[in-house]
Length: 286
Image (cartoon, rainbow, N blue to C red; front, side, top):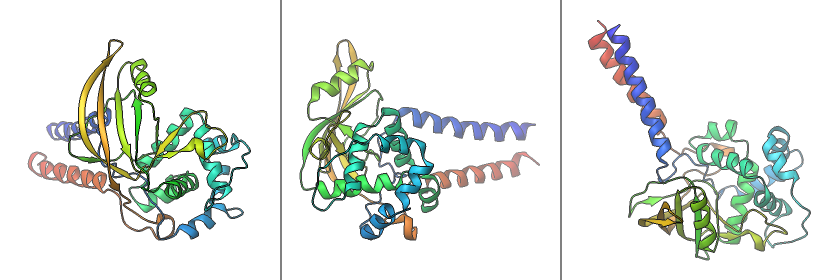
């Protein structure tokens, strides 16, 4: 009985520690994010996505939230050299979809890139991710830097001087007041002041953009320059200043060759936990 209780406490402690870390919203390098930039397979991926009965059509048929997002795309006759109508439809649908659908997509982007198997079998937005990533790389790709603002009701922790990523597509605005008001109305959270090298003004490339203005890539790495607290309308919140550092892609062309990349932290944690249980079992369970 003593052995069982001891092992139970080990497992419970591990579970609780993971829960606490998740609740703290620590800003890190988002090691498990889908951050493929398709540098070695751009044309091949474009064909796989857009061909008849290709990846886009299959995911629209099997992913309800993606289908709902895509069907609301308004007819738009804009043309941009180097991009297809599929790219513009992706920007248009993402800009005007419901918040819960966008959250579902970004949650998957944040967590589905730790290995090729997860990406292939569990990430049901591969076509949308490719089209958005490819469009943003073409429209900016580090050529233009801009200061933008992003407000969230979540309180983030960060360390000054460290490099971090959001690991998902971030909506931002050029005006601080609107995002600061958002944080205040949410009862607190975090206001990010961001100098971005990936930001794309979606309004310039869509016929309508009701929900968003500026979009930041999951691959962009920032340096934490400053962390401070502020107050508005009797609501306290945190302000984190981020400056562009570089771009990072931990894997390339997962769909075709499953190149190694991502994080093995979950596997390592499980191995360590199993080892601890084995050692303690040998001492206390005899």
